[in-house]
Image (cartoon, rainbow, N blue to C red; front, top):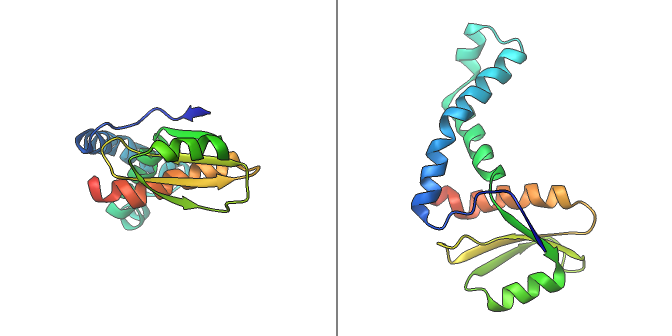
Length: 137
C-alpha cells in the first residue's frame, strides 16, 4: 500500500484554504495555455471565462489530493475499520483499488483498476472533488 499526492485535508476549512490558494495558480496556467495556443487579446477575453479558470482551479486542487493505492485485500482491510461510507467505482473483479477518505468527511471514494493505475488515480481524484469537495469549497 502506498500514498500518491500530498494534500490530505484534516478539516473542511483546510480544504477551503487550499482551494483558495490554487486560484491564482489556475489563472496563471490558463493565461499561459491561452498564450501558447496563440489567442490574441480579443479571443482571450471572449473564450477565457470565469468557468474556464474555475475548471482549472478544480483540476489543480483535485490533482494534489493524497490517495491510497493498494490491493483489493488492503482496501477491504481498511474499509472494515473505516468510519466512512464508501462509494466504489469500477469492477469488483480486479486486483487494484485506489481510495480517498478525508478525515473531516463521513464519505470516501474508491476506484478499482487492473492495469491502468494512473487512470484510476485520475478518475478517483475527479470523483472525490465532485462527490466530496465541491460542496465544501
